[in-house]
Amino acid sequence: MNNDGRKIYNSERERRRKQRQVRGFLSLVFTLTIAVGIGVLGFNIAKPVFRHLNDNDSSSVKNTEVTSEPVYTYEILTFDTDTYTDISMPQTTDEPIVTGVFETEISEEFSETSFVTSQYSSLEPDNNDITPPETTAPSSASYNSAYHLSCEDLENISNLRSALSKAVHQTGCTTVIVPLKQSGGYIYYASDVEGARNSTAVKSNLRLDEIVSEITAEGLSPVAEVSTLYDNIYPQIYTVASYKFADDNQTSWWDNSQEKGGKPWLSPFSDYSKQYLASLASEISSAGFTEIICTDFVFPPFRDSDVESLGDYVVAKDRYQALLSVAYAMEDAVNDNTRLSVSFSAADAISGNAEILAPSEMNGLAVTPVIDLAAFGNSVTTFRGEKFDLSGSAFNKAAGIIEALESVCDGLEMTPCFTRSSLSDDDFMQVLKAAKTLGYDICYFN
Image 1 (cartoon, rainbow, N blue to C red):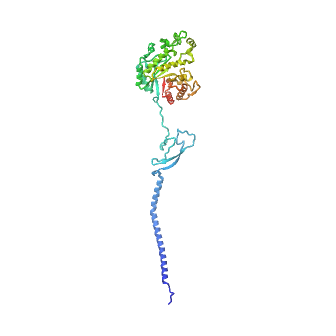
Image 2: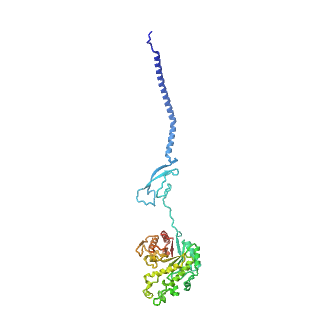
Image 3: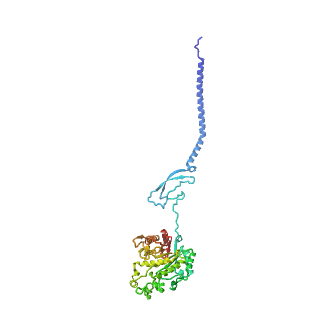
């Protein structure tokens, strides 16, 4: 028997190996077919979903203000003259002006970018009006000013009340100036000073306490005005208070003959003059007046022949000291609640012709210069050579005159007084504002 026959075992194993390869290939083909089918089917199902999601995402990008988180951007701000009219920043070029780079925030409250610049507290997107708020010119009531009564207002109580009503309701003043003693010597209140009564100087029956009571009842402050040395009444009776001829020191000097209307003057060199004026100041102060403005610290217009008759002392360089001695006598007579001030022409003071104005010798005295704007031009130069510009508005003119007065008054306490008749209503307001701007709490008008 031949042992080299077919190897049945090995052939069977080879056959099974080939069968496994065929089945593996078919399984792979089947798996791939199933996968492709599932992929195609899944894509067709998922495509509308992806499209819908993409649409929503695009929409969310376009509407960034819906997000809850703030988004920061940077804007370069420009103000084109065609778009804005900026009245606070003058344009020096026709090109747009870049004012700066600012960080801005887009929030849920605004649909447009809002921004803040250093020139404006805010710029509202829906309101391009950047005009500053309108300022209203203050009325005279915004300032402390004084209303000047006339002598006729003091003839009786009815006239006084009528004048005070006008002062309160038409002028808005805070103070009333009462002319108790006028240039020439007449007195417009019922004085208790014996010399005043005996000289027939008294022209009114109103008592001082009545006058003060009526003024304060209106909420106003009473200020008295008293003429001092321009007095031709008192020295007619009390000749000891007049100028005397040098040869006998008894005969009163008159400024002209009686036939030509001549009259005597109160002399600052006489102690009787000082005593008379001090007595008037004392009773006025005791009645409650807050201030006494003393006017007419003047000398008569002496001629050469008068100097020969009276003596050289009436024209001496130091004669101003006699004027100051009268002012100090009156100042010593008033109480602590009354201020005494010396009045003179502003033009005279600036030019150096107000004799009583000697700042270094006026300790304790205040001054009230009278300013007539019509008497000044476009500039003024003081006697010291300082020049002040007065051109332009009434405000500039008033301010320049006050500054010139401050220069020549050398720190004296001062209250400016303006001539009202030379001022229009608009100029009146400009003058008030000028005085206020320069630090004066009150200014007077006569």
